[in-house]
Amino acid sequence: MLHLCIKAENTKLRRSVIWIACFLIPIIPAIMGTFNYLQNLGILTGEWYSLWTQFTLFYAIFFYSPLIALYCSYLWRLEHLDHNWNVLMTMPVRVSNVLFGKLFIVCKVTLITQAWMVLLFVLCGKLSGLPGLPPAMIYFWALRGTVAAVAIGALQLLLSMCLRSFALPIGIALGGSIGGLLINNMGCGLFFPYSLMLMGMNSNSYDDKLAGDTWKFLLAVLVYFLLFIAISLRILKKKDVRA
Image (cartoon, rainbow, N blue to C red):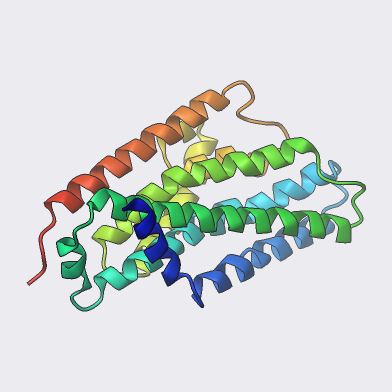
């Protein structure tokens, strides 16, 4: 049944505005980060690492979580329209399959978004005159940031499921990202889910802040993922049709 739910969610993506957001929105922080890098070449002397700090300064803080929130809101939008929630509640399908089907699609689109972001990073680096290709560590940071999206995706699916508003969960994600920056700077990032995006991508830093502690980061992602999935499943199992 899970594969049927995934297939149904995939159908929503055909000719979807999601792909416009996926490919166009990351261009904004790419331009902003590259411009900031080129304007400060006198103090940003770490080449690829310096460009990465500027990329993630904008992308990881202001765009990454809201993009995931956008994907989640879009996937729940149909169920919140008309009487489609009643249809969902009366379908002969386990609610766990419905939820994991949506989560699979969110992770799929997020992975594509991250791959596009890395490609933009490389293209902007070459256009800026940087030699060779980015160090392997930067690719690792990008991958680690993608792992964090599993926890954020579970959280945003929960919010989008409970809130019928399309925009409110996206606003929460933006506020959470900004708050995540502040909490991460206080050294408490592992205790706030939105900070995981910044920590995973090593946002705005030359040195790996998680060096030797990646396991703690992965454990935090797992804990948040299980927590938000458990809450979502509990709500879905107790949810009734809407009059």
